[in-house]
Image (cartoon, rainbow, N blue to C red; front, side, top):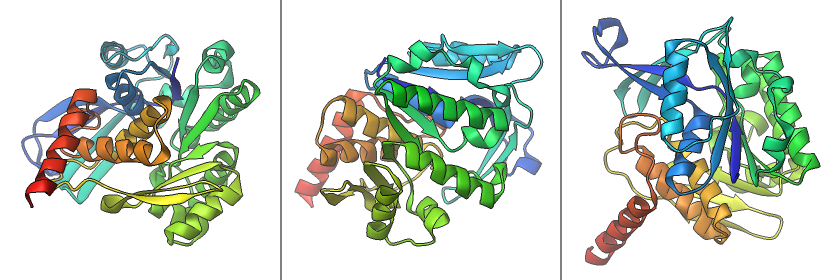
Length: 317
């Protein structure tokens, strides 16, 4: 297995008859979750990805697992709860820069994940373990599950990749800061946004943040700085890798997950760090051009067309 990830996916409802939820009479139903988005993005790029989670033994849960399996993700480690339901959330896209989310996930099946749900051999046979800061925010047992997964990875030489993916609605700022810094310190690679860096360290200068994350324990930091692109930092070198311009952002949700999938793909393919971050930037940009959390995630041919098209536009300017 190339990448194993752990986290909750939910049923996503988006208003169709009106952009405002309070006036909407019809909704589209999709699925969404940071970790499964990354797993789907990797599968589309030709990598083996596995998703560990728990869903309700209900029609939503069964439909979700079937769908994610159909995207090429291994779902053999997803279990069904007979006592808790699959989580839901509603996404209201008012404008490209005004997206509002309401969660209905408290007490969900995924929030009951616990260390005993982990198969040690499944994690130890992966090249990378991908985690986000969302899962430990769901419950104390989820937090313990993430700690256990990190321990398994560390004992077996599996590289731990962590995207803080801050969700302030899920826990107190004090607890979030404490846990996110703890997990980042145990991770080999961290993928924060500059806003998350500011939340954790109180500074927003990219160079300072890169050094702070390195000092905290990570060996590679890839810091997202919006449309400008992303920096990478190691103890030996650093660079700003420019982003790809997107004229019309349709839906920004999922861009960070696309970025993570692109970066992991580049690492798996043995690209240079600059090429790896460039791939992350490309996948993240493409994710914003389509409505939905993962619908815009490309395959390799689509990435190639996207980057070639931009190169040709530069030539003709």
